[in-house]
Amino acid sequence: MTPARFNAITGRYASLRIAVVGDFCLDRYLEIDPTKQETSIETGLPVHNVVRVRSQPGGAGTILNNLVALGANTIWPVGFSGDDAEGFTLRRTLQGQPGVCLDHFVTTDLRSTFTYCKPLVTTPGRPPVELNRLDTKNWTPTPAVVEGVMLNGLLAVAESATALVVLDQVDVPGTGVVTSRLRDGLRALAEHMLGFPILADSRRTLRDWPPVMLKMNTAELAALAGTPPTASIADISGVAQALARSHGRNVFVTLSERGIIGAAPTGDVEHVPCHPVRGPIDVVGAGDAVTANLIAALAAGATLREALELAMAAASIVVHQLGTTGTASVPQIRELLAM
Image (tube, rainbow, N blue to C red; front, side):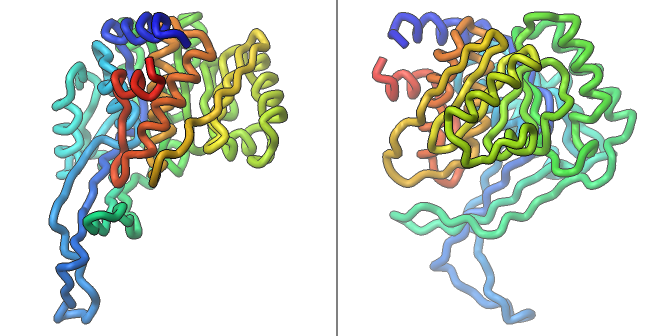
């Protein structure tokens, strides 16, 4: 990619209006000082003394964070939080970011706030060490009334958005934002608005999803198409190409340290390797950074390969941010690509 193309693509980010539909969660980090050791008098167990608590949007919120870092004009989160302390914090972290409009982000007492609580042992001069995570999730089906509000939000933002991202983050089907009812609405939207960029990612499965662009990792591709995660780049490229042709939309497969593959319905396939590791890494959030950069670049007129190059640069920047779910800005990406 030439500097001129980089500037042309990223220069359009300030006009983008992107909706992020899906499971927003709260990433809560508890920083533990190991020098402040203590034993509980009541239980005799070691006490972890927390010296700092920090919170940020996670799940679909990580995609939103990266779109904010890229300078998108308007970002609509379509999702929900519970009417609880975690929900209050999540909403506050969302509304404090430039360009974020919360008109379709709902607080409801029918759901708990999806929360990842991450205890981190922090020692000066060393990378933080994450202990067992404490998660709060919803294990019952999303109530129909909440489904209806989510579907209405999806349809409302689609009228004004430049592009749309959908993230299904929950473990149990039907317990989050992206229920079968919302996917039906997404299908109708995709069939009605041909050419409208919609990119979907699901940690469970993308099988039988509507005709939208699909992003997955090798394990998810294996579950979808039977391709072993250790398959060669050539084999994965062939499967992605066939999937893109049959689905009628772009397909993206992230390959961890091997980079990323993008396939178009036209038969075009591109592979972009990852950047060299420059020190300790933390891979949390890299996939969501890829998602944000793919949708922003494609909505801004990038070619398939250009979008992949920008996504890989962003992923490299994010994995080198330790003990946090990081983001990559346009100046950071420009510097890495030496533009």
